[in-house]
Amino acid sequence: SGGAGISAEAVVVQATPGYDCPGGVAVAEFAPNDRVLVLQRSANVGWLVVRKPVDESRAVWVPAAAVEVADGEPKLESLPVGGCPNRQ
Image (cartoon, rainbow, N blue to C red; front, top):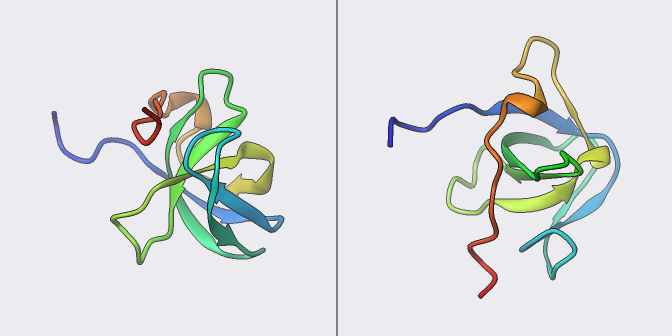
């Protein structure tokens, strides 16, 4: 594949767990004002794959309503649709 691809800088606007899959198991916690990178989205853009800038190894799903993309960043609809590799 051609490198890292598109991502969007965003900030958490309401505390939320991070899930292994949409509607799955909570595996992380995010607090308001946490900065995250949005990497992927669900097909209906209701869920987003994010990671904390300091933790490149771990990406988790959060409800899209919990984060706000910064001005000038790519639109969520332009991000790739993510699957759920963690779920067998």
